[in-house]
Structures are given as C-alpha cells and as structure tokens.
Image (tube, rainbow, N blue to C red; front, side, top):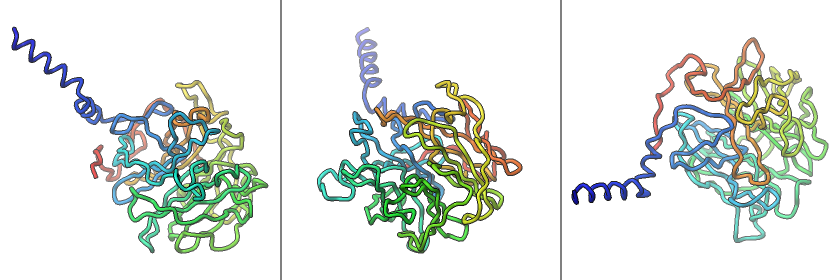
Length: 361
C-alpha cells in the first residue's frame, strides 16, 4: 500500500512539473486555423505578431508582426519591436523571439522606446543576400503627423535585424502611412502606400538594394482616397489590392481593386468579404471585426492564397486576435468567406505541399 501511495505521489509531482506541462503543450499539435480565437505558439503562449506579414524562405514560413507590451495601451506606447515566428505548416508556430527591439536605453535613437513601430513586412534581396524589414516609424514625441519608413536588415530570416535607416515614403515631406511591399516576378520591389497628408494612394519603385525609393511616386489612378491597410497579390497576370477605409482603430468594410499593370489604372470592385464572424457576431460591414494586413500565396498549392486580418484592441493591444481566411479568385473576382475553422486541405488540390511537421531549428 505504501509503495502504491509513493508511486501515486510521484506521478502527481511529474504531472505538475513545469517541464511535463511544457512537453504536453508541444505534443498538442494544432491541425486547424480558427479565426478570431486565441492562437497559441508551440510553447502554449498567445502569438504576439500584430499587423504582420509572411515570408517564405527555404521551406519555412516566417510570420513577422508588431510585438505588443503587456499592460500597455496604444496611448501608453505598447510597441516593443518586431516579433517573429516560424512554421512549416502555417498552423503550428515556433517562437523566434523579438528580432528587432525598440531601444530602451538611448533616448535619441530613431527606435527609442516611445516611438511608434507598426505593420512590419520582410522581403529577401537576392542580390545582396539580405533580409529587409520595412515598418511604419513615427519618431518619439512626433505623433502621427509625419511618418517614416524604417528599414532594418539581417543575414537570416530569424534575425536578429539591425536598424539601418529611415526614409519619407510617398514622395512627401510628411511621409506615408499604411503600406504594402510587393516584389514582382522580375525581382523589382514596389512600395504601395497612402501619402500624407492628403491620403492619396501612390506607388514607388525601390532601388536594386531595396533601401530607398528609386525615383518619384506615381498616383494609383482608380484607388479610392483614404484607402488603408493595403495588401497586394498577383494572380493570373492581374494584381489584386485588398484594403480598408480609414476609421482609426475601428473596423470598416473591406475593399479591393485590380489592375493588369502596377503603375496603370486600377478598378474598384467593392467588398470581397462574405459571411459573418460567428465568434464575435460581426459581419462584412466591419470586415468580421478586423482590418487587412497581408495576403500571401501558399507554396506548393496552385493559386491558393491566404488573407490576414487583425482585430485591434487599442486599450490592450497584446490581446488583439488574428483572422486568417482563404482567398478565392474565380473569373477575375476575389472573395474572402468566413469560416469558423479550416485547414490547408480546404484550399484545394495539393501540389507537392509537405505534410504537417514541426520546426526545430
């Protein structure tokens, strides 16, 4: 009897041991994406990568987003830098840590704590073998009137990224706001953004290093003024731009545009969203409660792509959730339909995509 009691006590200790609990979390491999619900990384912690984007490199997806600080509202400077996660299956994400931090020591740094660092997007420059992170950067104490595009560089996708420089986007001394970095098939990189202060949507080509705009920005004819949160994808020779209106932190109806030439005329098509967010009971008039942040193709699956949206919580931004949904393009028309949960099998016919696997690098 004593032996049984001792064994039971030992099992209780093991079950409550942190390492055991951690192992159980790691074994609980997720198989579906559940929009608008808490999304845990492989450590069992809520993913902290807001307003982000995806980079696919050598078989691995990297998710970069705003690292929000615990206990801080947006008004209290919640921006802590860029957080990165990695995955082989787009469902289970390994925490790679904060790959670019704000500067908590040097008050004169461009990245001094108190700056506003938003919407990071990372691209790879084949010429320089360099990863570049672009982000909206409002210097400490400046507010939202004048914006910069911050640029940081790294030698590998998981960082660390080193702050490199900043520039005024949009061809305006006031800079630019929300943006998309789109690399075309010929390797040319474009900065599509809303210009400050008039809220006109413009496009500029970056130089070969991807460091600075190469020349003047051109107005994107046909894209409605005050279009924010742009995300660009190319399908079937046409470019699709998903975006939102301008209503501060509050969600509004999504909108999308198409063109057959990035610097040409764009056509407005209205709201691509369908259905209702059953978690929060929010429909398409408010984009399921979210705002677009990125659209990206799924490697190995023909024409499959995913739209990323953020549910903003300005009073406690670290608790903001994510909405990821499949994008359908049929007969030249884009649609994004609500799903309570889904997996890659729902995207269509597979074409060499790897089975679910964990990242351990």
